[in-house]
Length: 230
Ligand code: SF4
Ligand code: SF4
Figure (cartoon, rainbow, N blue to C red):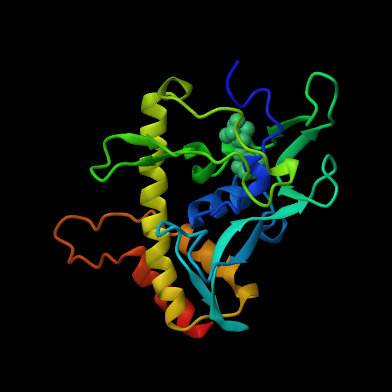
């Protein structure tokens, strides 16, 4: 049994989970979800959510506040007065599991941030380092209790973990470029899904034919006219 199998999923309750534009595109196109049903913006003035990985976005309705795009939280049924990721499915407590069990409702399609927890890449991008996980993720509420023990290397698949970390870093680096474009002239929050959809639907381009002058453009260049018009 894996470390998470008998857990109420305190991590999915405690943390604001940053998502990338690729995650957003996946949810809206492959799972047919509405952006407003799974995404939100979390204020992050101190950078505690972005942790220098996820980009900050600014919006016309609140131009001084840096936001990170995250999974939405909703009220918990198992722990009244607390919140949880909107994708977390809760099994109510019983004698064997006094805090209940938690299961990700989109496990196969979960965001890269979730796939990587609790590992990060070392400086050379070759090794994964496990975080020291605190006993509680927020304010001491039992709902936010975290892992029953520290993780060890044997808890994770070494190849999948590194590959997930590389993808997560790549996508957040790309998302940061998108944020730079958006932040040049921040649009309204309600325009954001359309902006993201346009960019991520145009990530694949055809190479120009041989002997044809190259007119290739980057995805980030193609985003600029939209942003200026927004
Ligand atoms: S998407 Fe799944 S793994 Fe990620 S926070 Fe939500 S419930 Fe947890
Ligand atoms: S809190 Fe720790 S053990 Fe529980 S589901 Fe999250 S990562 Fe797994």
